[in-house]
Amino acid sequence: MTFIALQTAPPVVAIPVAVLLPALLFGIAHRAQGPAGVLAATTVGAVFGTWFAANGHDLVPLMLAHLAINVVTCVLLYVVPPERLRQGA
Image (cartoon, rainbow, N blue to C red; front, side, top):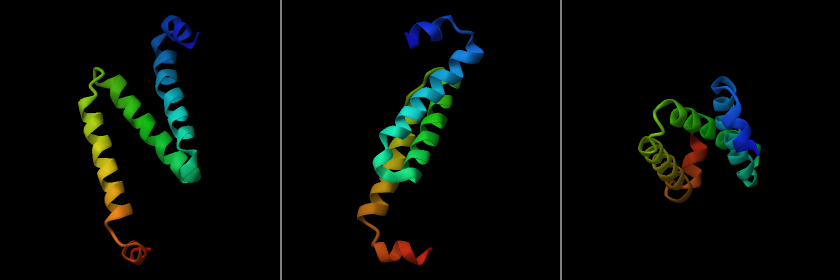
């Protein structure tokens, strides 16, 4: 039903809905990470969705950005000692 509504809606309505709705769902899917995780995932989802809609549906840069985010996160979680992370705070 949503797909049909987006197909018949003008682009000025359909594109923001098509970007923001999945971003919100993506954020909610990260609720186990707490409110900060939900906000971060929603923001990243909106940025990625906007890029996708604005740049001819090119996924390659988004895949590389996602990879970079995951690499940095894994390094911070599993390589850098926790006491080293606390020094910056």
